Amino acid sequence: MVVQPMVPTSAQTVQTARLTTSIANGFVDPAALSLMSAKDSTEANSAQFYALQFGRPGAPRQWAGDKGTTGSVSVGPYVRVNNLDCRDFTHTVKIGGTDYVRKGTACREQNGNWNVVQGAA
Image 1: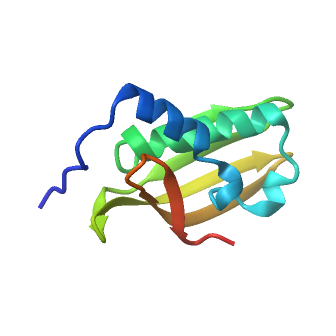
Image 2: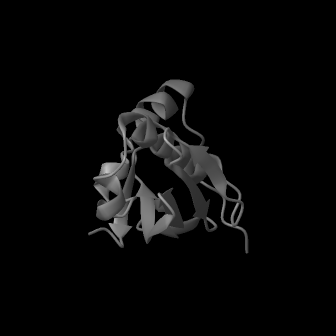
Image 3: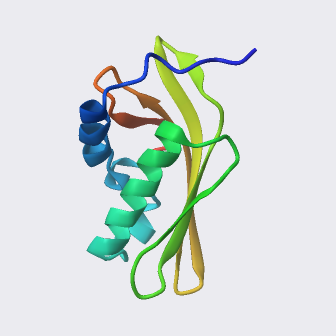
């Protein structure tokens, strides 16, 4: 059975949600977060949001920051939990040859924001 996401959100809601879905809220390993530059965080935030919002299950969304920092976000299929669209995610950040991996589940709230509901520190 294929579960369809809730009614698509307007472009304005998507833009607002993109800006408020923050990797600092459990999407990235805290050890990596403390080593990331502002550009790294911006790129990781964008990749995290777009992977959750629009990503195909299992197809990683790559990102690159500065000074060689890279990452990828993979998501699972949509599932419905308490009337919310939820997805499992894996966000990998590579800094200086070390991989920092955070796995969890995020749900999209009615306002469009994605929040980690399982796996956050």
